[in-house]
Image (cartoon, rainbow over all chains, first blue to last red; front, side, top):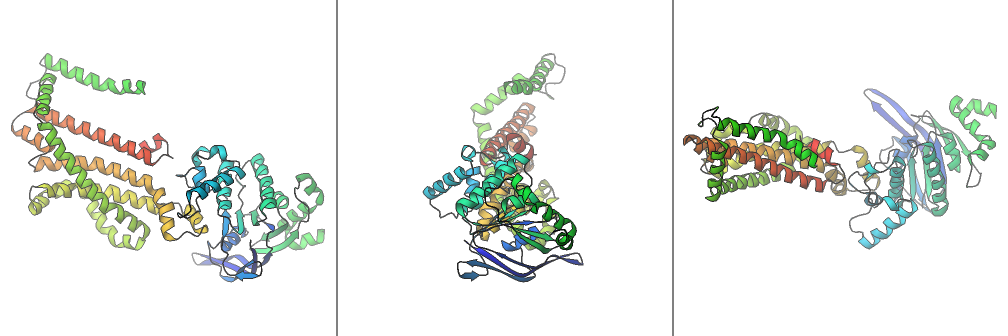
Length: 254
Length: 257
C-alpha cells in the first residue's frame, strides 16, 4: 500500500519555441488506501499528472513522495497504470496478457494460480485463450485491469479507462471497481472527464482546470452508491459549475 | 477450398490443352515449342537418371546456405539499427546505394573476384536476401507501438525485458515477411547467376540445354523452378502462420507481398 504526497508539482512542455505549463503548482495529498478521482476537461492536465506519478514523464518542478506506513520514498515500489486504451499485447492471449508483468523466473505453478485468480475476478475465465482481436472493448479493458492487478501494485492509476466503453459496460465496470476497492483496499487514483463517474467512484473528487487544482470535494457517501442518490446530494451540479465557470462562481452559487 | 482449387486449375488446364492441340496440329515448329509428350519424356529421363534431382539439390543447397548466412547478417543488423537510430545514420546512405543495384549486375565483378565456384552464388543470394530481411526487421523494430513500450515501462521492465517481451514479438510478423520475400528473391537471383556462370544447378541445366538446342529440357527446367518456388513459399507461409497465430490468414497472406 502507498499514499502519495505531491508538493509544488509543475510540468512544462515545449513545442517548437513555444512552452507552456500542463501542470502548475499542484499540491495534493492522497491517503493510503483511498479512492481519489480527478476530474476535468480534456487537456486540463489530468493525464499528465498520472504520467508523472508512474514515472513515464519527469516533472519540471516539485516533488512526489510515496508514503508507505511511516516510510517515505521518492519512487514507489509498484505503481500500476490502466490506460485509456487497453494496450494489450496482440500476440498474447487474454491469460498471457494478464500474466504479462511477471518476470521470467516466476514458477509456472504460481503463474497458473495467479492467472486463475485474476481471470476469475475479472470474469474472463471463458476467454482466457482468446486473442485481443477476438474480444470486445469491455473484455479488453477488463484484461488490462486484470494485468495491472496481477502486478500487485501498491498504487493503481487509471487514466479514463472506461471512456471508450458503451454506457452499460461502463456502469458495470464502475460497480466492479468499487467492489475491487472494497475487497482489496488498494490506493486508487482514477482520472475521468465524466463528473458522474468521478462522484460515483471517488471518496475525494479533485477538480483540475488549466493545469491547476481548483477544488477538492470530499464525498462521504458510503459505497455502494447509486446514481440517483448521488444526484440528490447536489454535488454534481456544483462540480459541473466549478469546471465551467471556475472556483469563484461556484463559491458564489453555493 | 475445393471450389477454389477447381477455379485455380481452369487456366492451367486450358493452357496445357492448347499446348497439346497446337502441337498435335503442328501449328508451330517443334523446335520452338516442343510437344508436351516430348517434354514429359525428357522430364522422366532427367528424373530417372537423377540429373534433374542432382541439379535441384545443388540449387536448393545454395539457396539454403545463402539464405541462412543472409539472415544471420541482416537480422541482428536490423535489430541493432532499429534500437540505435545513431547507427542507422552511419549505415543508411551506403545501404540505400547498394539496395538499388540489382545483384545480377555485380555478377561479372563477383566472377572476377571469386571465380565460378560456389562463393559468387552465395554472395549473390546474400546480396538479394539481405535487404528484404534487414529492412523489414528494421521497420518492425522502429514501428513498435510506443504505447505498448509504456506498458512495459510502467511494469519496470529493463531494456532486455522490453526487447524480449515487447519489441521482438511485435516485430516478428515483419521479420517473417521479410524472410519470405527474401526467400523468393534469392531463388530468382540464383537462377540468374547459374545461367551466367555455373557448372551445376538448374540454371546451369537450362543454359546447357540452350547450347545443345534442347528446348524440351529448358521447359522442364523452367517449370521445375516455378514448382519449387511455389512449394517453398507455401511451406514458409505455413511456418509463418504457425509463428503468428494471432493474425488471421488473409492478413498474413496479404502482408507477404
